[in-house]
Image (cartoon, rainbow, N blue to C red; front, side, top):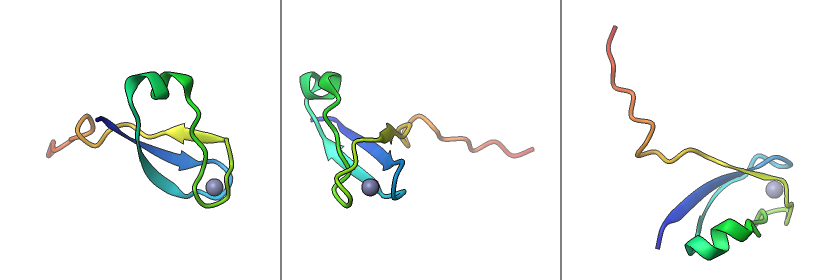
Length: 54
Ligand SMILES: [Zn+2]
């Protein structure tokens, strides 16, 4: 199952959730700390490998 990383807009808590694709599409994700529904998804670490040296 894919994992998704979210950050809470209310308390800045970053948490990881394991969701099926169907669950992810419903976007019923809430913060485990403050139960807030205002969360934004973080971009996967796998996608953000920037190892460029200038
Ligand atoms: Zn929160």
